[in-house]
Image (cartoon, rainbow, N blue to C red; front, side, top):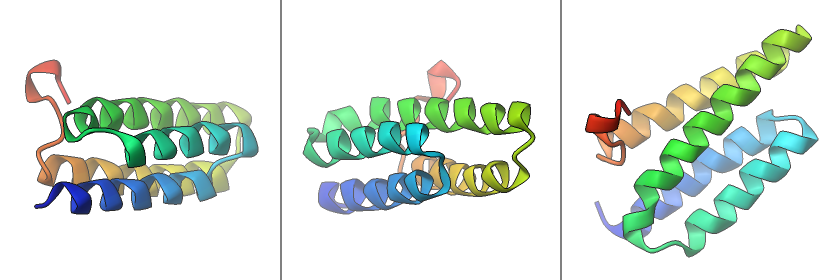
Length: 97
């Protein structure tokens, strides 16, 4: 896969999470998305790991608030992000990613 493809696909996944999130979380996903779009290729793995942690944080937040719709959307797009990252080799296997 080309680096431009990886950046583009990661940006799409972050945009999907951004749309599924509440406004505060959406701002954080948008910020991470801008960072990914400007990042050098070696920074994609750490950015993916931060995106996964951020999605996990907001999934748990939606559970605490009892917001099933938010949880459903965030969990679905988080799974897409994880699958893409694993297939693209962007997760650090030794760190448990």
